Amino acid sequence: MNSDSESSQSDESIETQERSDDQQTGANNGNKTSVSDPANSFGYASVVGNDDGTPTRLRVDPMIAINAAKKERAEALSSKQNQLTDAFGAFGDDYYDDLSTAFSDFQTPMLSSAYADATRGMYDGFKAKGLLTQSEVDAGLGDLLTQKTVDSANISTGASGYAQSKRDEVEKKQQSLGDLLSAMAGGATTLDDINKQTENIKAFDFSKDVDKLKPAASKTALNFFDGFTKIPLANQPVENVAPTSTSGAAQAGSVTPAYTYTGINDPYRGSTTRVVS
Image 1 (cartoon, rainbow, N blue to C red):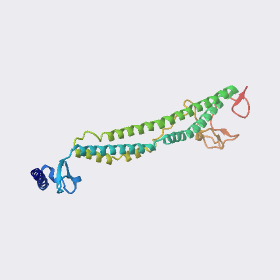
Image 2: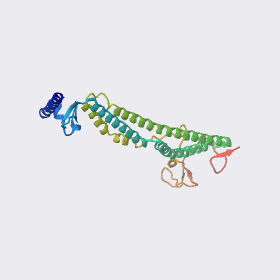
Image 3: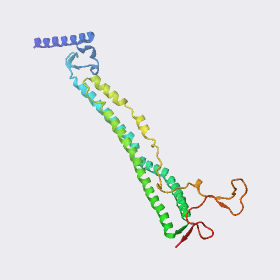
């Protein structure tokens, strides 16, 4: 009995001495071990297993540290993916609806102006013809209203396309950033490589990319009342209230029209346009 006990203590003493020597020389990663703090050891663990309190060296599976690092990397990747999703949450339905509204607000005043210009052009055409039937007048004004309806629909279509273009741009960028993030993890075979990937994932910053997407794109004016004669307000026919001759001599008689009418002359006094039924 005593012989066995003495032999066991002798082996433990040898182990303890070897561990101490390793710590001093660095052999067998002994410089990465600590009797007082087993958590600082690399590849080894120190446990108390002898009656005299001396530690017994145990080999620790290195995959434990690697698996722990991989778990931390996965958690960092998941966290960053959530941050990316939250950042693009600003581009919701309200954002795109407002883009559509802004597009319509930009185009509508120009439609109203073009309608007024086309109306002046229509009446100028009436004047040129001179003698008109009511049905001709109604048809001409009806064409204006029909075209206004068409152009109003074009604004709605354009607003949807304008918002969709931004939506496509945002989704493409989000996909691109997501792909970059996913490529940051994987292919690491050492603990250092895994930890480096984890650091890169945590440092991945996409805030500037998101900020660049927020401003609205420029808007191009649509062409309204295409094919209609349009006379801008500034160019509408006016009466010459102070007519003069080419030589500068004052004109005598009634006020001279600003331009010469063409077509059938009005057989009646007064207006240059006469509607007959």
